[in-house]
Image 1 (cartoon, rainbow, N blue to C red):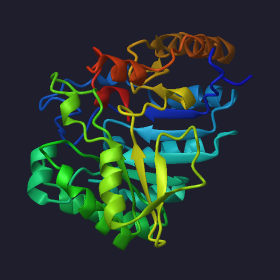
Image 2 (cartoon, rainbow, N blue to C red; image 1 turned 120 degrees about the horizontal axis):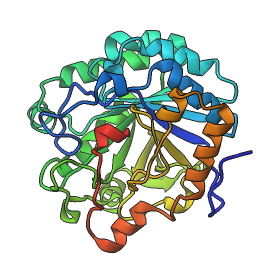
Image 3 (cartoon, one colour; image 1 turned 60 degrees about the vertical axis):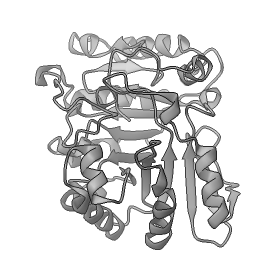
Length: 330
């Protein structure tokens, strides 16, 4: 039986965080000196795989691997190989900051990885240092080139524009993406950070960016858009590829949400913006059956609300959170 909530939304897309650790320190994602989960609290690959097998038996078809930064966890290619052999899983993707991608991308592709998204908020080295507190832009760009060689195309670039910080780079990203064959996805600044600095006034809306891009490169809606996908995609009228907009604040897509989340420490979440989560690690380690685990998951899905992003839009303020983004997974 598929996992459907009380709004009849089918949940077939899982985000699984393999670690809370990261080699960057992006200010909107984590504190400069984060406190990591103890290693004993982190699920091992076999535990994650068992939970994914349970989910796949009930209709989950897509798995996206996230972090933290997933490439800092050892032997990630072994985990991808496990997923690639899982009945029902049709698509395996990875979201990464790209710093370690150059040397790891071919083993990941060989293991069965289908797609890769790279989070990159600036193409300017000085701004990269300011935003990430690290000096790794060259490594990220080299990783993107390596991913193209490995055939993980089209490469998707996740870009968050912040008003007063980097909102002037939209056109530069488009120019670079059209030249290199990337698909840029502009993501609105989400209220999932560590120190209360999220402010609606810092959000650069997808509509604003789309209008600017359309003025230089006319856009048309992509007829192949998936209504359950977070990005609204547009085609360049001249045939120069696609660009996407994830407008989770100004135009929440909660009504078509198909996503579930498993954190690195074994918590199951049905909404990025909802603090409600259930513990799957404890029953898993105490010998729960697959049916027991599926029952816990089904109960959580049935308790899913209409959408946390809708509440943010209505309240015009961030929702109180117990986890930062690097502890949940992208």
